[in-house]
Image 1: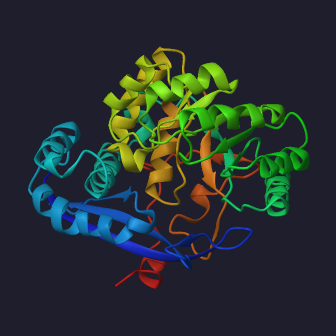
Image 2: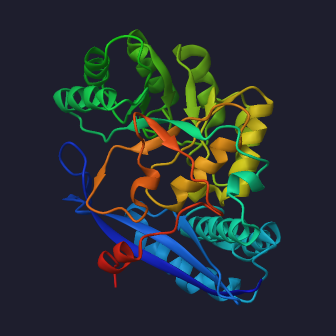
Length: 364
């Protein structure tokens, strides 16, 4: 089962977010860029992965094409851990995170898809078996910076059946608006994307406390200041979530040892793929720490997150990006109904990208 080809398939998908488009470098983003990783073996079997890209999509695609592919071709697709460990060692001098690791994550996910297809089994079965086939999903809203838009989209998410809503706001007015629009009892979380010092984060946590948050996510810069996060946990009065920026399972061990998190959030397209996500999550589960999948994806990364969540002992909520795509490569397979995702039952990840979407929205 030798790897014959590795290809980055870049898509530019039109989207709407219930408000103004997010901006980068002073300009609104017109497309969601997705990096799919297509891996073909010598006998013609094809597996699909997804590499984290966001606004760094050109760097990630280049890492797949010019760095990862030439080294991966000719290696054993069945030896997933061995192949990925070797590649991580080869490329470690370029850093233990960033585009190289994102590209490796996409390759690793594709190798699991291949393994499942060859065995005729879903990835969740390869992980020990699905404990559930319906997965709770929560709506992860954009950062609007506008209480009216926050209220409108929060209420809409609840009407659509999502049992939890995540904000990406940093001010009290927006958090208050969401809580008032949703009413009491609906879980609400706030992801602040690492804006504050430890003391500022403690003060913000205390301001947000009246709004009954399930967790406050990544309140401290830098995100790996685990001692600082532990202080926010102790003094801020809110549960703390973190982990999307951790790019190997050993970071989670350090995080847990520092008592830095009530909720850990491994990200399958950033951490190195399925096996590394599993190792991080099982470490947390063994210590009684909640796991929530960081999964603002629309492709194989979301499918991989679903299979991982299904195989975990405890219930793992799945993040769904609050974003309407003009076209989706996986269609209804990754669309929640009533706030619940149905686990695909086919072999591998259970769903291949739509060739028409790949053709019509490819970045040439």
